[in-house]
Image 1 (cartoon, rainbow, N blue to C red):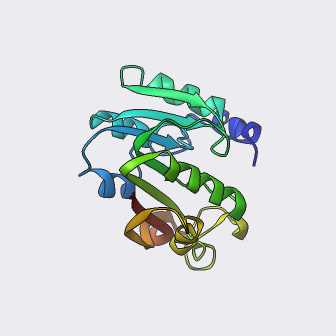
Image 2: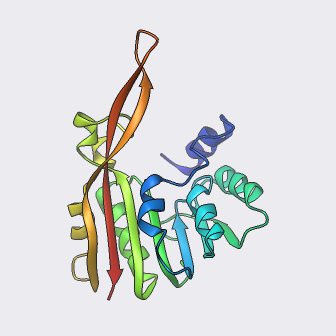
Length: 201
């Protein structure tokens, strides 16, 4: 999907994603000492705004101009720099934290994005990746239905092979979702995500 298609998707709805941060971003990163962060493929800015509210100096980057404009309008009083750019080519700032949340790309492009994000980190900086896991297609709910853009925590670690990093956490995690059933009730569903947290050596 290209930037124009994402522009259309964002323009078609007042809010595409939750205004709250991703639950794993909040759980894993709340204890970090604030510094400089980049939220790559930031969408409407929910994770970037959450980080800024905790004292981080944040750069939010997305290739959808509509999404970046929406994020900017919702965070005018926060210390966030918003940029329209492609995760594969945009110049990245030097940071202490790089977040890639649900950046679903084919293997070669994903590898480029995660290696660039790790490369933007200062020594001791954290790379945090959360994405729809490959198993979500058959065992979970929601998310992309194209297996070529789904991946596992192990795939991300393989992408980073040869780079200097220490693994803090790398595993499959579940998100519990409530969905309407066909009888006016609610059913509980699990979406499966890949979660990777590493520190650059």
